[in-house]
View 1 (cartoon, rainbow, N blue to C red):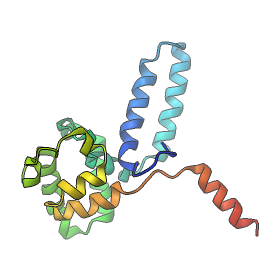
View 2: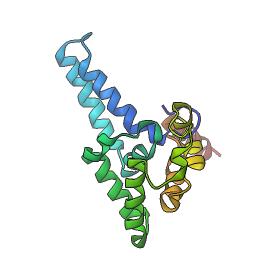
View 3: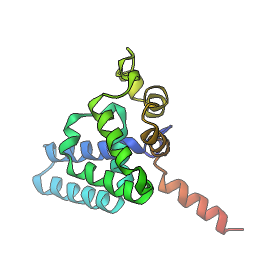
View 4: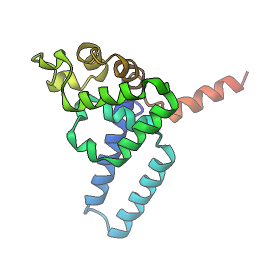
Length: 166
């Protein structure tokens, strides 16, 4: 994940959920081993997880789903992220625009034939630039959040090491 090119922040929560599900379903190891790996993975995710991950996951068009209306983790992350980053006077606007995005309404670009094509949706920045522009408030924050990538700890370690050895 950290070595992928491009914007990867919106993928992280979905990939972690998928990884934990795959671990739960694994039959190649004993139940004890599986539980140990799952516990370590969940501990790491709990330590690493921040509201921006859920917010980015909610806005990634390739994973957009009505089941997110019942996803307490993503909805909670959305509100926590908004309370930290989005000015209070924009909260209602933002929530309305998120609902319109999730319901696929209020944006004439949604009628464009390639809007919901898989090829468009796997590139979140491309999608938001071409189809999300009608949601002016959400558009701004979607581009900011989804343009971020997941930095590698290895790269950070090398950079900090080289800067301290002068």
